[in-house]
Length: 212
Image (tube, rainbow, N blue to C red; front, side, top):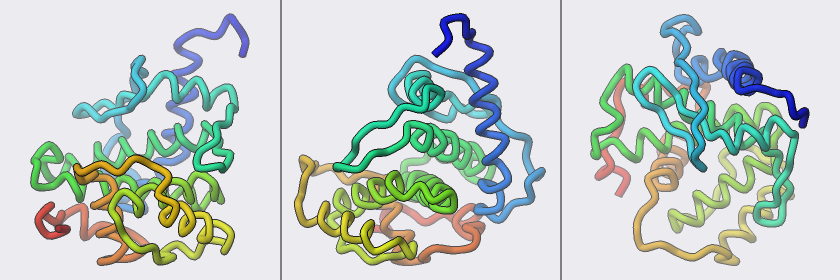
C-alpha cells in the first residue's frame, strides 16, 4: 500500500463501495433508490462497525484489509477482506434505513434489526458470487442458533456441504447467550425464505419473543 495515502483516500474508497451497493440495498428493502439520502460515512479505529443516527461508522481496520485486497481464512475457506467490508457497509446501511421506520434500539426488535441486516448482506454478496464469505456467514448463524440447515439460497453443493460439516463439527465455543444476528437470520430464513424484497419486515418488524 502506498505510504502517501491519506484518510480522504480511504474515505473516498468507502463512499465508492457504499454508492455501488446502495441501489441493491434499497431494492432488497423494497424502497426506491432515492427514498432516503445515503448515510454519512466515517471511519473509526475499532474492530467493529456501527450505525449512529445519520452516520454509519465503519471499522478502519476492516477497510484497510479490503483496500489492500487481503484475504483471511475462515472455517478453512479463503475469504476476501473486501467482501467483509462490503458486508459491513450493507449491514450498517440497512440499520440506517430500518431506523427510519422504527426504533432499532428497542430491545424488542433486536432479532429483526440484526437478522434482516445479515440477510440483506448475504443476499447481495451472493449475487456477486462471494460464495466463501456467504457460506461461512450462513454456517456460523445456523450453528450459533442451533438450527438444522436447509439451503435457502441455492448455493453450489460444495458450499452446502461446508455449512453442514461446520454445524455438525461444532468448531466454535457454544455460548449460552442467544445471538440476535443468528436468531433473527435463521427465523427470517425459516419464516420468510429468500425474498425479492423485505419491505414487510421493514415496516412491520417482528418481536424477539416471536422468534423464540
